[in-house]
Image (cartoon, rainbow, N blue to C red; front, side, top):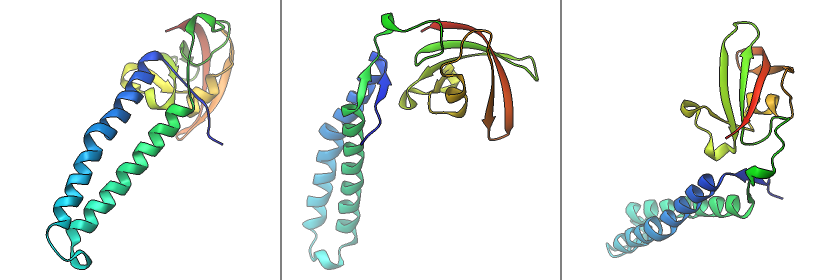
Length: 158
């Protein structure tokens, strides 16, 4: 059974676009490479043919994975989200209790995560630690460098 993931409209469009590119552009290229390699003679000693077949197999795996992700994707209706707790699409302002540094994160699906723009995955250690918390709560999160304590300062919607 596959895990359901929640996406923004923008995130779902990107997934569909990536899948269409793989199917409409990359798949024909892979078939063409196989056909060209096949035309070069004896298949038992044709490394180019073997490489093209392997590349096609990897491409088909990517396509299957994206199709599975899309099949289990759910669009988030932002108007129905509870703003009293940290949920997917919450923008959370937190303060590191040890250093006093304030940070802002938006919790998104793993495929939409982009730390440079402040979007972290709900599956990340910090994302998991913040989910379900309310303003004023302090949460202790295990990260690769140890444990950090974050205080929830505010919860907004994207």
